[in-house]
Every structure is written in structure tokens, then in C-alpha cells.
Image (tube, rainbow, N blue to C red):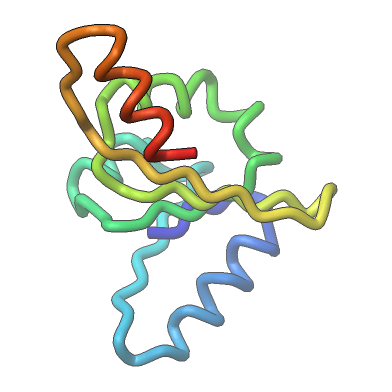
Length: 107
């Protein structure tokens, strides 16, 4: 799923992904619909958004993270010419040693 608003970058990435026949691309315009509703209704494997739109989305990322996503989140930043990829995996740990072991595996 690609979330876009005023971002031509996100729309361009969506267009690029649509050229790959093996991918199903869903677009959600954050100016016209609630992004959380769109995510919950489609349950995407990957969420792509322009990080510059986040300031206009009223705590969206915080709400999304609190929902414990099982998707990858790709943040595009045209101002910095950067791509941020966040991958979430739910793990339950029982103590600090197990937490440290998980962190070592992820870093």
C-alpha cells in the first residue's frame, strides 16, 4: 500500500511498482480517507509513505506502531534523498537477557 497526499514522490513510486506484474499495489490518498482505516481494510504486507507527510497526519505513525504492525514500513524522504525501511517482528521476551539476545540478533 502506498499512502500519498501532496507527495509526487509516493505517487511516482506507486506507478513504478505497478509496472511489476507480481505486485498488487493499493493507493490511499491521506487527504481524502483515514489512513488507518485504509490499512486495516487491506492489511498490506508493505506500507510506503512520504515521511514529509507525517507532520500533517496527526500522530499517525504512533497509532500505527501501537497497533503492533506485522508489515514493513518504507519511508521515503525526498528532502534528504533517503529511504527508511522499518521491519517489525513481534517477539515476546521474558527477561532482560532474552531482550539483549534479540537485540544482538537484529543489529
